[in-house]
Amino acid sequence: MRPSQARRQAAARLRDAGVASPERDADLLLAHVLDVPLGRLPLLDDLGVGEQERYDALLARRAAREPLQHLTGTAAFRHVELAVGPGVFVPRPETELLAGWAIEQAQSVDGAPVVVDLCTGSGAIAAAVRDEAPHADVHAVEMSPDAFRYAQANLAPFAGVDLRLGDAFEAFDDLAGSVDVVVCNPPYIPLEAWESVAVEARDHDPHLALFSGQDGLDAMRLLERRAAALLRPGGVVGAEHADVQGDSAPAVFAATGRWIDVRDHLDLAGRPRYVTARLAR
Image (cartoon, rainbow, N blue to C red; front, top):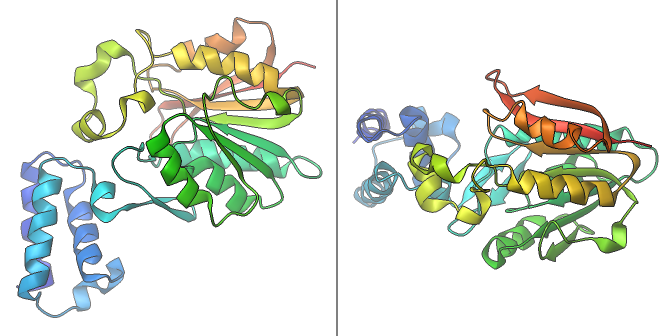
């Protein structure tokens, strides 16, 4: 079968299954099977029998709403490629904006900024910060042993990153009062919103990385307290939140009186996405 025909049929199959980006996923899976860049797909000859069988098998799993990244084993995040799979939260494109903010903050600090990534998961934010701000002193922590193993693999190329296994909201006592930037993508989905979560996340991402109490802000409250303990006066914190938490997430910081410059930021679709704040001097 010609690759163009295979791609059309695959996209139709994924569309019927409710996959959000059927054409893109069909192309990425075919490129994965053939081990070629996306741009080469239109130039290829007919698929061999074995290639078609492998493609069909992956399409069946994607149609069953297994995450694309679990099928390919990788996820792109800014300028780095991460190993992902069962047991670790798959980083989303919107989190790249939060990572970009952390990178900008690190780059604005004289000398070697101290950056702490709480709830690091796959190590995505920590890897991106070290990749784009190589002078930064980067620390990261993850509670899940399964996710920690992915973070170890993904941060291994970035020499000097301090990765620890433990509770994000109790970690780094040794850094208290000295950190320039705290960044976190915490769990933030309310337990009552279970049914509204996309199948790929609900059935395959670890629930530890998804749900955070009845209002989704339990982890944000813990983060506020931990960031206040870790940051130097004038240091900054940034945290992702759900698009319905554009008022409630900043309110967690504003209510304590410890923070100035509390503001919320939109993602590329114009939805509230992450909050930032500066520890008062």
